[in-house]
Image (cartoon, rainbow, N blue to C red; front, side, top):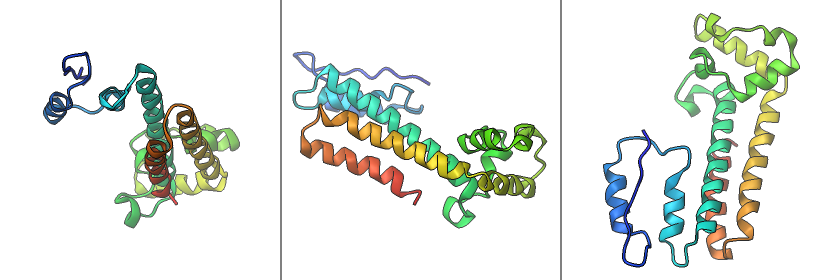
Length: 178
């Protein structure tokens, strides 16, 4: 569900209280534009549309890196860490980045139909095959590159103090998967 969040105070700046009230009432997930980051930028002191755009791009990149690393964890992570069996996404029929990369590296995997997986044991075996291709390392490296790109894009637009805080957010996404 896509929500438009509105709340302006005199002078055209976002009203933090109106925004917070609407966020509390939101019953959907954050849309692909990550409007929350944009609103934060607009509500900030000296917020500009270029800052809003930069923060929106940062959030999209961090969200992408999070998903990429989550896909790695689905294939490599133990149930104690993830709360679910290895290969759950694959078993659900989700084509993940590690699976895509593994299929490029091993011809036999290219013919695997995820719909044919019959249970956790087969999903686990597929995870082993994916891991053996080196696809997990490449997926991690790609995710780390996306995080580095997200951080680099903000350097030109944010003061050091604010940049350091967002660097911590970006680093926290990566640390979860180390």
